[in-house]
Amino acid sequence: MPALPLDEAGKYVAAAYVVFVALILIYVAIIGAKIARIERQITELVEDDE
Amino acid sequence: MYSKGLAPLAAAAAVTITTALALVFFYAPNDADQGFVQKIFYIHVPMAIVALCGFVAGGIFGIRHLRSGDRSWDMRSYVAIHLSIILGLAVLITGSIWAKASWGHWWLWDEPVLVSFLVVFLLYCVYYPLRFSIEDPDRQARYSSVFAITAGAFVPLNFIAVRLAEKYTHPRVLSQTGGSMPGEMRLTFLVALVGVALLFVALWKLELTAKHASMQLKKLRNRARVAA
Amino acid sequence: MIRTARAILRKDLLIELRTKESVPAMVLFSITVYVLFHFGLDRDSLDGELASGVLWVTMLLAAVIGVTRLFAAEREQGGIDGLLLAPVDRTSLFVAKAAALFLFLTAVELVAVPAFALLLLGPGLGGAFPELLAILALGNLGVAAVGALVAALAAETRARELIVPLLLLPLLVPLLIACAQATEPLMRQDAGPEDLGRWLSVLTLYDVVFVLLSVAVFDFLLED
Image (cartoon, rainbow over all chains, first blue to last red; front, side):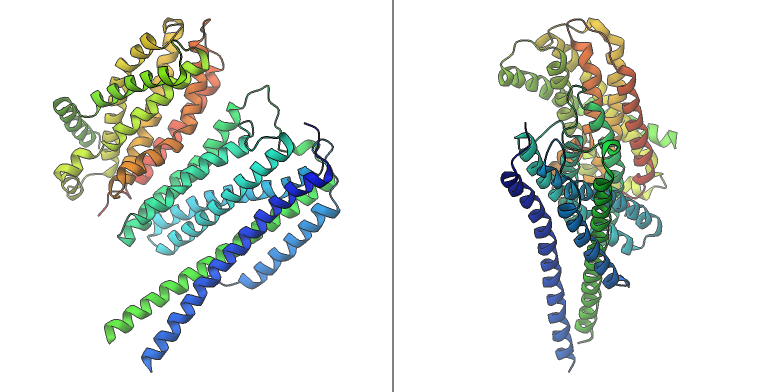
């Protein structure tokens, strides 16, 4: 199959790189949520102590 | 403990990946056969290599865990496998996009990397149900390590077998043969590979830190509850 | 260690002979699957790669049944605790279970392979029989080792019947590739081995890796 013209090829390449970036961002978001939860629980513990 | 060196590592990863992206789009020449579409190679193959190393590392951590009985090794193994599964999914998706763009089909059985990854991915997906169906934490860790070791040994064997099964008549369509890659492409590829590897280690440390903190916190809460 | 292994093996074989739970089911299953393939593929006879593929895929699916039931006796009668309390090397348990699985598979093949030749195989088995035996032997060894390991891994989980096929089948892919590729030229009209050395080496490598790995790792399973 001959190489795709640039505008069509661009869409596929962009899609692949978007997958990569989305993966990183989603992952960081999940870890961020986990850290937020830890923070909340620590605050609770400190309050219980007081 | 786990977050030592995390900030510089993450910074290094960010810098390397940005450099790699710049190289991919402004420096590396277009491939003669596949044209612009070949650029996907610079993201697909590094992720594949790093994921495979991640799975093998998961197995090695499993061995360390079984030999020492120290559950922190199991945690390292779990996170490595977990991250590699996510990367593996990305490998399958980007590989499929590449196949569609350069060959017109969403899947190619002739591509040994893609096919091996499908099998490896299917195997490692069972890690979660296996792990979380065992309640006793000690046993859970032990069985997970056994799985990690078995699957880690399986990965290279699988790759060899799938490669050998490739029909002689179909040339490798998606990958670049190392020999005929021009210097600019090779440099770009190496930078991308280092970038993805650094990213993997950074995310691995990040998740380990979060998990560890969460576990310490749980211990503290239990202690507080008992004391009350 | 050998003595313990042999004792456990004898017990398992006696149980199987008396209850006839695993082997007949595996044979029946294999023949049923051949019938399914006849209807599914809409073919009266197969040769070459189709024949090889149908034979081996059916074999692996039947093996799943055997593996799921491998520790059944221990589970149902609580024999595992007895074994674990006794000062017995886990390795002997592995050897016994793998040997039992190997023998079950061989028994199944004694019926299923001729049945396959009868029902579906166009060219017939005569072409390259000793080579086929070699492939079957090495293949059974790999399935036995991996099967015993997977059976132990899944033994304690609640969703055992689901985990066994999901774990076992991907792990057996390299074995399937080697066996199917090796058997394919034996099932053509002009049967004769091709590339046999290469695939037998792959099979041997697979078997060695997984036997050694399972032996090394088995101690950490079924421990309480």
